[in-house]
Length: 354
Image 1: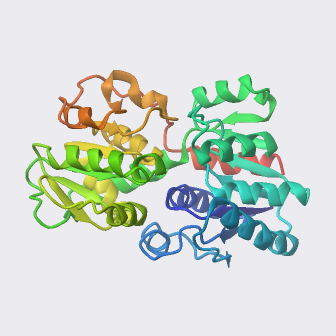
Image 2 (image 1 turned 45 degrees about the vertical axis):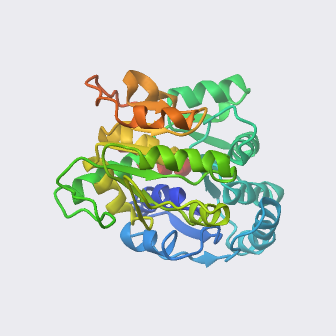
């Protein structure tokens, strides 16, 4: 049996690591990896393959950056030839990126079966391009691998129950394995932060937070006013938008650094006093690792993280500092995201339905 994975962005590489490992354990599975090049620089792409021990991509479309339409169109143009050559039993797409949508559309138009890993997530925010990508993918795919029961209910409400299988979350598999492997090792934090003292970790990259100069300025001001130092792991989009708006990121509590390799990020999060993010994956990783999270968004796909105050949605930047400095919850964190075997279940499901 042949599985063709289509990936292109940092969170997808983490999920791919789990799937690639599970596929390798099955002697009768050929796994072809297609990297669209959506994230194309070494810090956002190459280092993930090395650090997570993912096999090198069999195909790299090298589409690079661009508007949503141009980027997705370039992927579509490149995928036709790839699918004609490899003719997979399953095209496996991950999450909610332009790479996901392009891989799905290419495969269904060529009558190749599609499985969607991380199916059924919904923010119900139609302003997010990710919401359109995930909804369109779910309705086009043949098999929906849902990470949670909440995701299953979303799919059932849209008439997709018969295509749905709850597997757990493959990111849990990787996060817990990596956390164990790096526990007790040296932290890689921006200069000026004492890892022996309380600190926070932040990532900000979404358009809703970076493209409005006034909102971005307010977010940075709140972070700079924190009572503990904060490692701002600056996404290229954040750096570019801040420079365009004349907003200095460094200052006060904020210490700016480059995005970390995944093992270093997980190590920083599990040692941090708090996390600030607008990422989907990092909210969940903070929950898994027991670190309080403040999510600078109006909604979250990972609604389970909101239970017992482990995650808070922060819509007004003026309240961000209070959220970050809230006491660490003492309540339990139920295992909403699986037992660390989601990748094995996902690959088995593909084999059984080949």
